[in-house]
Image 1 (cartoon, rainbow, N blue to C red):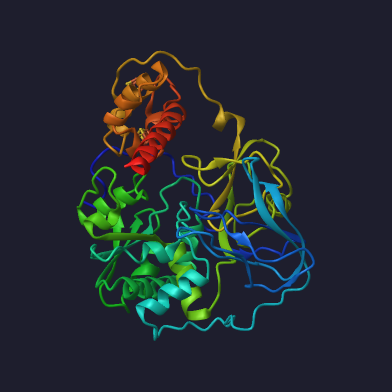
Image 2: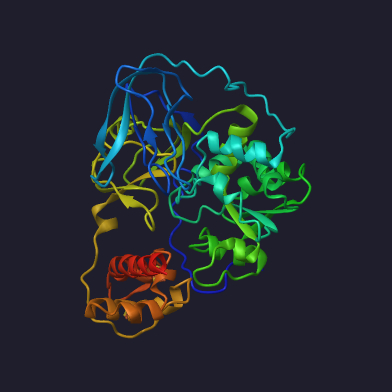
Length: 446
Ligand code: SF4
Ligand code: SF4
């Protein structure tokens, strides 16, 4: 039997419609809108002004705190504005706007296709290169990678875990990079093993990606201690805690970080970005994005410069699909609805998904029938029906904390399983934010 995590999980239809679409290079936009808040932590501070000329790979934003990141220009041209602009949710965020002129790259970036496998750098040099390249986690959270690769001195990493599960329906960008750029991903993983001083690396891939499994097995075989592990297909296997349990058998306790059980998890896309940063001096200026949906005529996987407007990407598929009722950044389970088509791609954008009316229509909510299906589905061992009940009463924050609402990973398994169509995730998400706020304030006071 293949490995997987032990509690909960669901099997939504995978809908990997774009799995056979090779990665194509997306044309340069006329104007790039580059957000200063593309990572977890403090937004970057712009270091360019209106009128400045910039090259591809040049720093345009510098970190403003311990958890923050550099931002680089993904295009060459003239800065036309440094101003707040609405993000995909319609919230104002500081952007550097660049009118594209040609495609001139910083000289230090190695643009050749040659694969560089020798890693001559020390752990400190690796971390510095990753930090300076603005690499962040591309699995969704966008946590600065150099911090995750530098755990506190009293914690010892035993495993580097590379997440190649891509368990969200529809998305195929990770599948494609594993099939098309396996050697670079494996070298990126070896670089991170060196930074962490670990001898073991597991690359977890779900069984529904046979070509990626074969190509990554071949690439991993050149690196001592690196092993591909084939996992059962189950959502949300890509959750850090679920993946660690599936691969190592260890369970990360409530409120603890993976390093507590000796694991550091990075996504395959991050591994590729680390390779490019360390071996090619290439900052994180582009990423692979899946353009998909049942109403999309041509399924695509594009290598896109960061800061490309969504509206420009729509042009590539002939405009907004006729039957599209909802536009999502990411997958259908954990993606974010796009309210603003003029927003642009970010470092961690993995997919643009179009859903039809029938696919998005929520059925009418009825009373809880206490079937327990939400409990069976929850991968964190929570009781979603109870969290929903307490949330609806209002003000029950102590009780919600006792029920560990903060452990919710917002995977949506409960919502997916509920026969009464109760919007469990929407309700739990709001209460979770309140409880986490209370917990944060309490820890600041102490
Ligand atoms: S959204 Fe939260 S409560 Fe619901 S199944 Fe996922 S972890 Fe459990
Ligand atoms: S799945 Fe829905 S109906 Fe069943 S116990 Fe949970 S909340 Fe109630």
